[in-house]
Length: 367
Image (cartoon, rainbow, N blue to C red; front, side, top):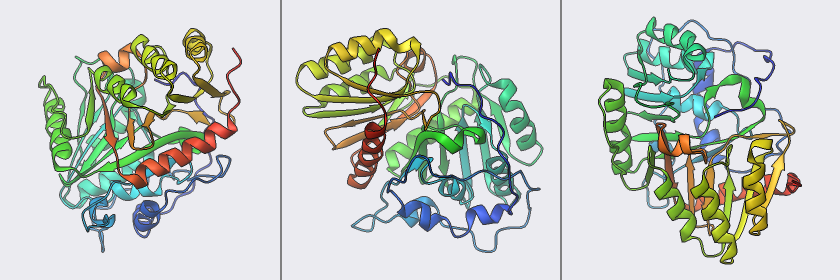
């Protein structure tokens, strides 16, 4: 959950929706390098009137544009704010048949317009938005989408927060994200989005989405690589416990005792544990525990030069977790959350490179 104050409203420009889709997919999917965190990033334009005319040349789905070494689809990691929102907007504009979106906070008129345009050209678009904590923020998007052919519903009230950030395209590829679709935060927030086209994972995400959309209680299947909340602690502490040499960690919150204990235990058994977060007084006891165990905690202050909203664990540079889960009891035990663990070398390498740049920039936590 964010503890930050909203950024000032940024000046906007107004290209057509199709400009956010056409010609950016290849660029966004190919780029996994880190650019300086002080560089300018994409500022979403105002919401244009959605078109009901099919796109002349619809872009392919993310799965078909990122072939792996053997011709099968590979996962793709997008690091924000370095790569801007163009790749994610391209994914949102790419479906031919279906798009299912789960989102904690949707306050991005460009994304909303893309969803409406998808629906206008015959795509079945379903959206679930959080109501428990973000109803007032989400109401304008809810009303706009409902008025433009999108099937939009509030999340089931059984969850404290519907904190998931994910969408699936054409039942073939899902994007699991750490970022909300909230444009005022794009310019200087560290976040990630990763594609997952594993059939078991996609089937799990889609089945869980449908149950949540219908308000039907369900225990999400784990697929091959998924970590769901409620109940994320087991999978995350298991990943931490599997590390033998190094752990790299981003998170926005650090209050869950099991997560703190697992990181401290890893450090005491000789694993090099590095943590990058945004400093907040709330985490002082936990930071004290971690540093006393030898964990290297580095922090940015406020939003200068960047705010850490990402939730990531990389174990031994062989496996990376990317997801919506904060290290808090609420996030792990009572919210709807989703994360994925991936061992794709390109994804892991990109995550490590981004983390290394931030770790080198952030000062050590001083207590």
